[in-house]
Image 1 (cartoon, rainbow, N blue to C red):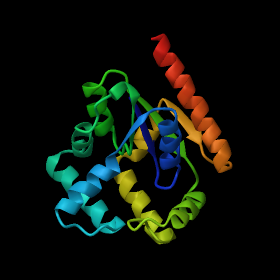
Image 2 (cartoon, one colour; image 1 turned 120 degrees about the vertical axis):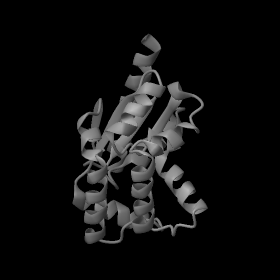
Image 3 (tube, helix red, strand yellow; image 1 turned 90 degrees about the vertical axis):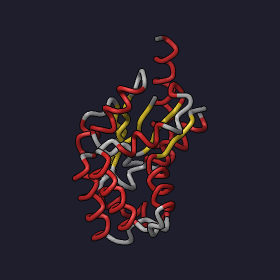
Length: 181
């Protein structure tokens, strides 16, 4: 299993798109959060969904979203999970599944804000203040530690095509090493 982590707008979704083209199955932890929030009637915006995600972590443990997301993983050896936010989630996945590798995607805040504004999702932040608030929330959850403990890191500071090439190269290398194991 591969798990992708990184700050909002760093390029995690693009990485997952490359992985899907190479035959990986994808499971998004954020979709699990949104699905549960929708069932509770939570408004689909960053502030409300983030507040709900935090409340659920306080009530049910920091790994609640990993536990809920794991229900959707049927082929762990060919699955990439997007959205790791804390060490408790990582420990849950490592205890539940055999080989877990973490890939961190890094991009600077200015570039991440531009990307977020371009993608224009309904639950995205709209400006620098919103991104600062979201970054702070995710850092409070522990994402910085997951990034620092990653097995691989891709710095996403080039063109989209170069990023996709780097992602494919890393994924192919991981697939090759899995076949050799």
